[in-house]
Image (cartoon, rainbow, N blue to C red):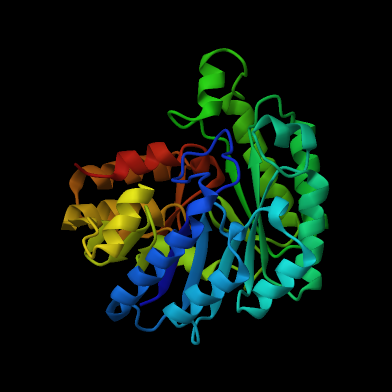
Length: 364
């Protein structure tokens, strides 16, 4: 077993763009943690050789340190090399950061998103740029030397110059890892409703691509390795846990809405607080699952592999006649390229149309 993902669905406030499973019912944290610990105990037979643990959400930093310690004690994290926790800057204090470091967390993923107060307010974040900067500084003072921050681009009204300034301010913080995503207008989110009502206007695709290119360029100059389409790290600081998702390593997910992968089976818990808590406590959790066919596994290898700098094995594209022709077309137009090791990877041009390439190489 490589990794354990722990989903903490509680948020003090939902961000306007978010479509992850979350809830603002903070008063239910205690009963949720009780159910979570029960699920971990029930799945102990799946938890051999744990190397990474990831607390995600939601907002894991709404938990007390005692709850976090209980979760780690129940999992058994003694051999874990990387224990990551997502953190909202609005929740952090120097004392809290020191306490979670003492509890065993050795990597932070801080949801900065932007270092521009106006943009933070526009997308519904509840922290300020100053709070984000303070959080990173406090984390460093608490002994964290493996810190990732999230940055978003293509935000409504965001200018090219604002984005370049955000990148430089992020680099000035001295973090080891940056995850960066273009804003997605997910169905049903508040921000999508605002766009559809004409209250905000989405950034055009060309500008979004330019923002992505300058991100890649500035981070490369700063010594960051672009190891996955949205992830950049100083050498040696690539996220071990997240990398397991992209290379097909087994992992389990505990908590409401969490997914697991024990090849060839994928399974997932219900993304409903009541269904999860009552199902666990009644020993009758309705976890859904699917067994991946050979075609499913091929398609996942294409979808996940092309997102990374390792790409895919050239032999993978030779399984099907149509795929050979399609991959050759993308190689010829410079969207894909071959490496000396016999891998096929996306070029910078290809990253702009990566979803289109992946879709073309997948089979029905």
